[in-house]
Amino acid sequence: MNKAMAAIEQINYIKSPSSKIYKTLTTQEGLGNIWTPKLKVKPEIGFVNEFDFDEGYLTKMKVQELKENKWVLWECIDSDPEWVGTKVSFELSENENVTTIVLKHFDWKEMTDFYRWCNYNWAMFLWRLKKYCEK
Amino acid sequence: MNKAMAAIEQINYIKSPSSKIYKTLTTQEGLGNIWTPKLKVKPEIGFVNEFDFDEGYLTKMKVQELKENKWVLWECIDSDPEWVGTKVSFELSENENVTTIVLKHFDWKEMTDFYRWCNYNWAMFLWRLKKYCEK
Image 1: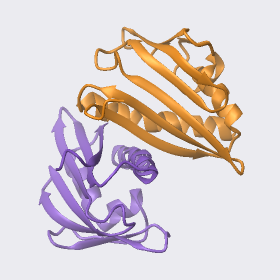
Image 2 (image 1 turned 90 degrees about the horizontal axis):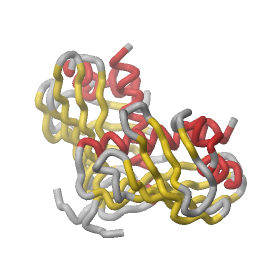
Image 3 (image 1 turned 45 degrees about the vertical axis):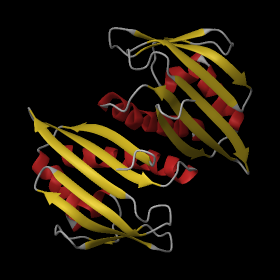
């Protein structure tokens, strides 16, 4: 990660096994429940996940790295121009029935209102992930 | 703002006059509803707002700048050590019945898990601010 670029970093603590959170972040059913119902997702390195947020374009996230129950890395290959080339990672660690999740969305070219809006919205994503995995 | 330091930056769009949002951010009643019910707050430059989050210490925010319906700047003078010396600003701009709010929490010495947790929680703060001001 280039330190000169802007990055979104957040953490949340979820009372759920890391396996459930990992499954939510890597499957059609999971991301369909917490992000958008219009999507194509496979838990497979090299697969290009597609998300439709009714914005007139698709957001395409290539699955770069997967470590079961521990790590997910996507590279954005199509979306709003500010997102293209950025990467999103989810790092999971489970301890005493609580899973810590660190979300990073990095390699933003600059700090903009869209960055600020996405920062707010990644928190909403983590909140929905928590609700979904704790129920 | 020292660019080498870490900053939290978020934006939200609230269907409410900027005057209502400004009042919420500068009064005991407003912040008592959206942040913590245990607080001492005055809309007065130089006043030290106090917030008690039941963490065993008070968070003290000195009111540094106020521009009615436009701008609030606090300096943290006591709290968790990572917060001391940081600043929080709220910038409001109203257009066609929607107020844009830019929140910045800046001059963090470094990017830590506590930064990541506060980033997540500032989004929850903005979400509650939106709910409170839109109702």
